[in-house]
Length: 482
Image (cartoon, rainbow, N blue to C red):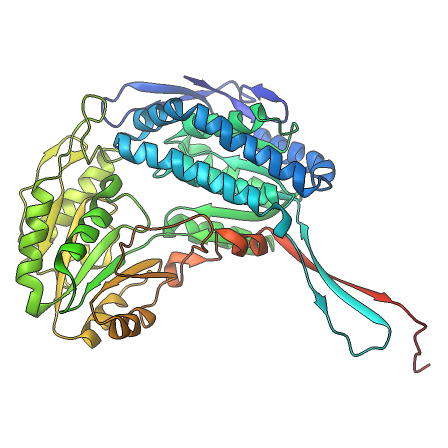
């Protein structure tokens, strides 16, 4: 696939004609030849989005809804093309690729449904004859920075609600899935969006810092939304703050799944396996720590190990494994290092380590303690770490013993007690008797602490991508003190 820059109505080569190669983490083969944007290219995209804003921001909700619905319909028609591109670029399972497609269709339809919900309110005024109303108004150009791990779903999320709110968008594509992000731009163009409303910039790794800084600094860019690591999120947040641009940051996670002594073990085991191993553990909501009451820990560990042994890892191009490849050799080596460190410090390996280059089988570690790197570091790999505790109070302390606070879950049959525990976990999202990996487009989603701030999803996202404006209307003559 040849990938070019999408700026306004044009597909362009980069200003200096450079390209880079995107390679499969499974085979090392080139899957895309990609235009490597310059800073001037990025500025041109923001310029074009700024020019398109004046007309687009005046469109009515029905037009915005119709166009967004058209994108959803078109994506449904192109589902197989997108799924194949996701597998080729990221090495993930076909099931995760299909989930990305269906989740994106749902997100587009939800965004379309919110077109008439971008609204304000009437506020009572103490001044006689005064009507005070608020309105939600589009802000300008929104910079969306999307990651590779859910390339279609998170790419769509970076675009859909800003557009419904009347903004224009520059999507900065990931270097690891540029083809998928390029196809997203094609979707919106083919669905009938006017030139300049959706622009897509691709770049090589070395150029990323300069391009991001130039886009955030651009006067037409008024909002930034970023999904990715906490390390990079800190940089984005600092840049946005320097230029007084509000930023929505959804960052890393170390999601705990707490299993209380009265939990349904079969349900908890299934949720733990799904949460830890879906997409090879490369999800911000992945179950990174399983905090289990010691009274049931032996049986839970036995069942989780048995469940994990049934989950096949392999090449999704030649079969239907549950687990595919990690995104690259660096990621695979990081997972291996975390396992080796934990075992060296006393953790018990309940499943054999099965690794074939970047393909890792599921790994269950029992007896994980704070001295081990895997206790605190985000693994972003297929590791299920069991931490044993002696009470609900200790479970809460361990669940909160992390810099992160994105997703969490608690399992227990006593719903009142389980809910009390859930309410004390420091996370933007907590599921009672559900997996940590769970999200719907109409629900607010985001983190606390080092997992970021702001909320994607549903009506909460309207606040992120609009300004609240107050208007007052005097319906009778006013008196003044002088």
